[in-house]
Length: 294
Image (cartoon, rainbow, N blue to C red; front, side, top):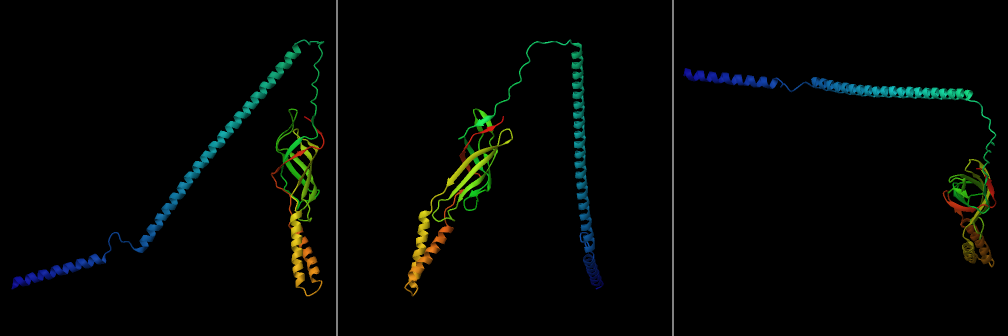
């Protein structure tokens, strides 16, 4: 009886110890679990360390660049100093040579020569560009009979060298200028043939001077007479139909007149035009000769 009582007491003691140990394990946090405040501090410390490392890296890179810049400046100064010394040496050598030449000339006796002095070379004769010479001109000013007006200034450039008897009078790309001399718009004149006329009047020569030239050019468009007539007749027919609907003996005639006027207005607005875009090359012939000094 006493033995069983002792065993029971032993078992109760073991159970109490187990419960106490279990409570302690639950109440105490593990080594890896940190309070929220400690975690935030750790994150802030890590971020500060990263920022400090980035700043240090940036400062190191800036220092390297400053060193490279200083090295380049030093190298440039050395080169400038070397160039200055070379220039001074060359000037000293030239001065010494001139002095030696002057001294030698003073010592040498003057020679009298009865030989005839060489004649000065005759100046080159001007280049004469004859009338009828073909010029290829690339337009840099766009032109159209719809908007261009007589008197408008135009500009272009030579598409190729102007060569006469093997001598170059003007280089390719030289500026050529002129003006609009004739404009006939197909949309402003019923049944007319659109025409645009130009005259190039100046050219920059190979020597850089500007010379006067006379090189006319003209281009015609297609005749719109047939189309304009069709538009006018079509308008008149429409007017006749309108007049027929009017309850009057003269309604058809009046309608025809109104329709004809409408057709004429339509023809005025839709005629053909001549267009010369920038970049187009036109071939012109000089109307008269001109000279270019070499």
